[in-house]
Length: 185
Image 1: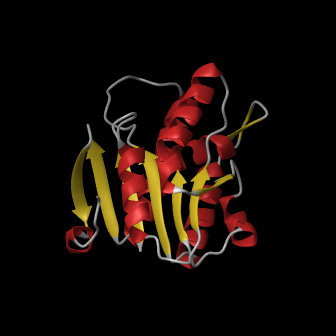
Image 2: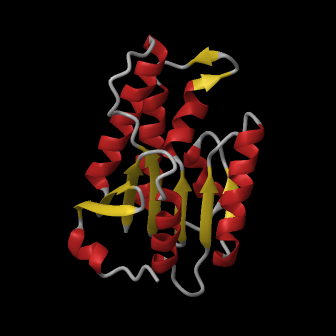
């Protein structure tokens, strides 16, 4: 099962994704949290620590991988259940390397994600919805936004369930019947 979750920043996506992933996990199969965020400052470190503390009771095997998500096939049992948090950070990590901007990073991220999720038994992916404001951005930021939109659309196409989270409210855009079978307790 492929579940794709998008929504605004700090809207409860990660908590909902954790509950969905937990409900999909199978006994005697690995349960992975794939952390993609590269911490750049104290705020990032605090956010990561809060996420770790919040999910401690779920007993994930945490794998930190900031680039080349396709390499999960070499380090994980793909028959398990995965939570990849987040696609947004993964694109940033691939696009901004050593103060260089990699123009086609979104293509690599899309290709790698589609490859790896096609091999996974269960995966929940988290992405940020960053497209609705009317602020004018510089070319690099617009390039990043367009790249993330491309990734989101590509993953949405192959997802069994597509969810938008808005202030902890779940809006199902695809796969409502399948979502209703998930126990979010």
